[in-house]
Length: 455
Image (cartoon, one colour):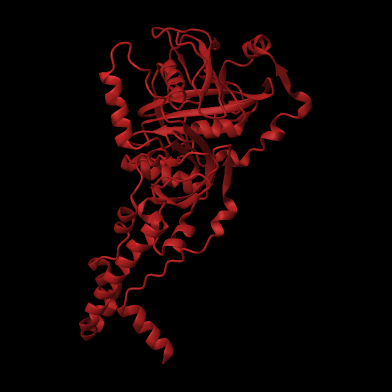
């Protein structure tokens, strides 16, 4: 009898049971601190968010980011929410996207609603309880959200920011602004400066900002680099620590292009050098680029579906190119309207070190379409933009805009070839180049570039 009553209760009422006090996800949290603040950050996966908020947020493309900000300074701090994501959801917006709707309430009856038509007289109870559940959902999301208000010295604020869904690595940039004086005081000071006779009083100093950047792992994809043990790629006795002149000599002696597996044919030019440890590289790129999944039957099926439908697949596997006798160590991509329009970035870790930092050699190109070929098992391949220098230069601009470049310039690479006499990659696509490699020294945190050579 009790089981029957429980079944009827579930059938004719709408249950909403969030568990906001569960904090198991904090075991994955990262903490960063300086003299002004301490910040704790963690991204909830699909299971965590469904448990904490009582609804499957991931199905609606929503991913909660938990933050705890402790003010260690002497002035109030305020979180800049758009620094977490310019496309964040407000708490009530996120809740509204997960509300129980009339259509879902009707569909919940399924076949039972037709077999036992008289029971539908109890439908109003389900709709009434759904309205109550939606109100509770609104209250839960608002109560758990990170509230935007000044954090006084010595105080702490915690809560969730509702961001768009990502997998792999999620870059969370936390920007905390020191709150200045009141608006009325600022307006009065501005009026005094405007009315003062020349020379005018010097402008007030802008409020300082405190910045932290987190690279947070999000379960959901099998990124290709997870199968690489970077420590074993180059044994310690093979590492070569260089200064800049020595590094330039060593780079000039490296291969100029990728190859096939058997190293019998050359492919795309190696037009990129990146200096920085893997963690730095991933945090600099993952905010704007997506990781690539390992090539499996499942990911091939996803790729085929995206190809046929002209849809996006942000984490599509990247075909292997070879250097040092192995396929790329890291593959990243930046897709646009569809899987057929994206930039590919492949990197290989070299035994070279610049003042103790890792040196990566890479290849970057831009897919601009699809064509038939007899050189691929599926008889199709992505057509690259023949001007491979454009995608190389794009990366410098992109990382400079992300404020992760210390210095950038160009070194000798594959050698020049003109558009009238192009070279060809492994699938037969032509390309032309000035023959240079972009060399980029990455910063571990946001910074202003000290040197960037654009020519």
